[in-house]
Every structure is written in structure tokens, then in C-alpha cells.
Amino acid sequence: MKYLFIMFTLLVTDNGCSNSKINQEAITLEYTTQGKSAYKSITIQKKRVSKINKHGAKPVNNVLSEKDWTKLMAILKTIDVKNIPHLKAPSQDRFFDGAAIGKLKIKYHNNTYESQSFDHGNPPKEIAALVKEILSISKNKE
Image (cartoon, rainbow, N blue to C red; front, side, top):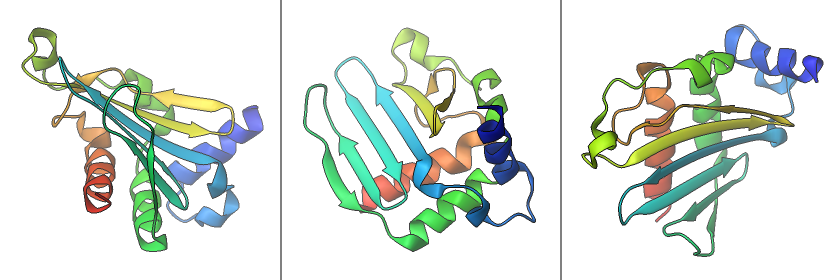
């Protein structure tokens, strides 16, 4: 397990490393947002985007282009994945229904790195580019 963690950490910390050194098929990116009456879940894997637009709904699957996956991996490479659970949200509107709750999960084999909740539309700056790209891909697949 430590070996997998080290390999995944190398992906995101060593800018000279090629993404081919890890099993990209084992990476899953998940972004969820929920509010009083809204829910959305976006799951991205190397060749697929899956969206659920309300609780209990069946996922809608689409093909993910190699270009989109490469862009996501380039952004992911700049993030300290092991620090994601410790990132602080820049705002707190979600506490009084001023914003939907957003959350990011990155899974690699049996390891899951999950952010604390944050206001949808205002993620911590360290993951903002990744969240923006996930949302952009999801929107383009509608």
C-alpha cells in the first residue's frame, strides 16, 4: 500500500516524470455538489465521464477524450494530493445555504484523498484549476 501511495505521489510532485509510470486506469476523480434541492455527482476515469444530476438517478455515461484526460493529468500533477484533506475552504457560505456544498475526491487503487467541504464555485485555490476543469468537461458532455 505504501508503494502505491509513493507512486501516486510521484505523479503529482515530480514534474519531470511521465504519467506512464503509474496506472492511469486506476485513477478516479469525483466531484460532488449538493444544496437544499440540488445534487450533482461527476466521476471521471481515463476513458469515461459519468454524471448523476439528482439523488437516486442513474448515471449518464459519456466518452472522455484523450485530450481532456491529458489536461486533467497535467493539472493533477501540480497538486499535492496527500494534502487535499487538509485544505481549508476560502469561504463559508454553505453553512447558511448561501452556496451548495462542493467536495473533491481523488482515488488511486485503494487510496482515497477527499477534500473537506467547500462552497461550490469557490474551492480552495490548490484544487481550483482541477475542479474548474472537471466542471468544464462535465458541461461539455451535456
